[in-house]
Image 1 (cartoon, one colour):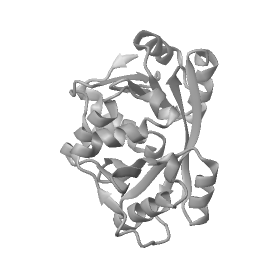
Image 2: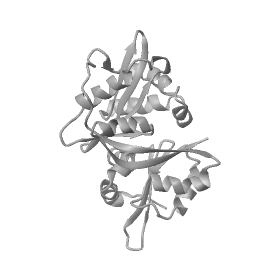
Image 3: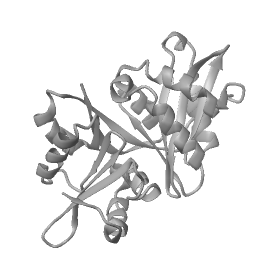
Image 4: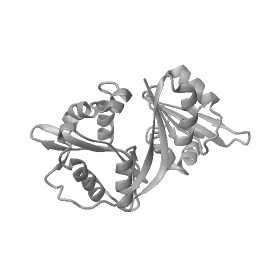
Length: 262
């Protein structure tokens, strides 16, 4: 593995840009933060012809891994994982399936689908959904960390910091539904480029799931934020939720996997 240089950056962006559904956050971090941000480190591997074979981007305590094919050489990547003892590793499904063979003792594995979204029945969400402020991010994080997978993935304060950074940069917003003084539902635009945006961290408080707050949130986001020429993606693991969106005319753009340190 070699560190990505300024001279190679444009070619790396072009490599990832051919298949963004399989490397959404890597592409975003590479184009938005580049290689000079203190929280970003990027490595790459090439074949004998000097063509990119793999990109590995470290952002905070996470690796985003991209190769255009599943059977790439994982030797260099495994060395990086062992060196950095990273908490989270994301990649296309086939690569994570291969990695888990040597990492299952120390990592939980999850698989899901990248949905390309654009269609959702319009509901009367105006009185429910509101955009969150920076001051509400700590409360949002507490709600998100009630989810077991997210509590394994993030240290306290990490989500708040990332949300705040994206808000300040104009690259993301958080949306909430309140019942009384309590936030009962959340979703957000976690990233935005001129080509696409990503919806994520959708959650409904467990004691509020007798009302379709999640449906109101989805309806709001997909009807109010849709822009011509810009794709909307979301990462989903719940088969019922995936089938619901497919039934509405949305489709699976890619399959992904992630390893979360135990």
